[in-house]
Length: 551
Image 1 (spheres, rainbow, N blue to C red):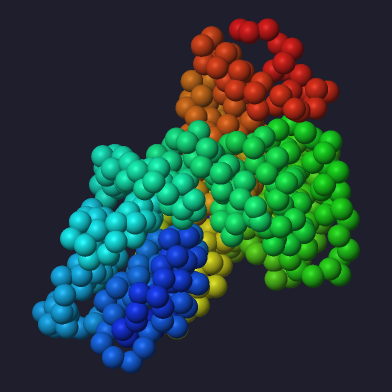
Image 2: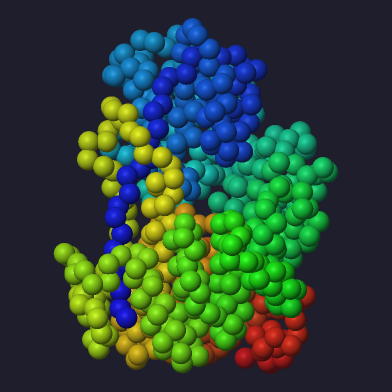
């Protein structure tokens, strides 16, 4: 059954924000620590607790507002930050009249660079310059200025005209390293360096600092962030060993911790150990609490996608209240498995349930994009013009300029992100299905459209969401279509997002071999051998890499 990927655009979360009253350095230190650790909700609460009657604190107001800069699950938070700016005065002149020091004016400069436009637009270069100026003029101490600049750089877009120039990143990294050289125990500076090196794509340097964070005894509150950094950097062995050593002390639910651990083991090719961790999750009773059932659904999807043991996939009833992207991940795994083993009924049933999950499978779309494939004939019960383009942006609600309170909860936007992820996976499954029907070019178009949208969505650091990385899927289809050069590019795009991911490396190795690119095939094979050095030797993929002679 074909499907329409049709999602309502979600309004941004914009809780009411007011200017914070004056507070001492001591009372705001906790808030700034939480800010630099990316604990945005905690920072906002701490800034609010630190406020007191008297003069407005431009520093505290700016710090609280800057937590609304883009980050996962808060893509529409511009209005909240703008409300904080407008609470200081309706015009720039009115706001300037309330400043009393050069530091106040620099903080105001940052707020206006971040939220000065009525339409969502951040002046990132101006923001970062103002942060550096706070330190250069002595308005804040050097450490605070360095950490603030690093936080802004990490929050800024990685590409495009507003992305910080490489020289800015290098200057910030140098300042952080210089501070750390004089104060090696500064955990927050080291944590900022982990994020900065990941931003620059320098995984070895990120790993070096993350391992120091993970060596803290007792485990530091930033240990989970460091473990996420190792995962993001593709240091599978380091992350697995760290999880084994400190996993129980992270404070995560047992099912979440075991799922994360199993995912790391799967990347190392330690299939037997991973399966042993996942089996108890698969056996969770149907009457268990929702968080446990979420981990169960994720465990089933991850195992099928990562192991490609398609015969293990089953379509099971969805659990009421489960996040759409979790449901979609399990449906994607079951649907792809159905296609792979020739179980067309399972694939069709998964598609039908995807349609119910993300839209109305029988509703025609008002707009048909030129890039979309032609209608899919021959599938009963559905009348629609093709697969809809997934929205690539979520415009702000008309009139939402920050001048009026808005009541949407962050949970509403979180649900919107989850639905868009589900829509990506629905389109992935549609691509798999029509590829199997022989409509290969159209399937690849669909898969590329889904990948373009997935690139704009926040991802998890524990495991990929969508459960099948979108560019890796494009590479798989291109490789099967015997278009190896394009497949190599797709796999490289996947590796840029998930460094050292073995299934992307395996695809790259196979594509390079098919293209007779001896050097790239050898390089991918060497990386795979390193990743899978502790893997199960009887696993077919590992045997292929370790036994096959160099091309």
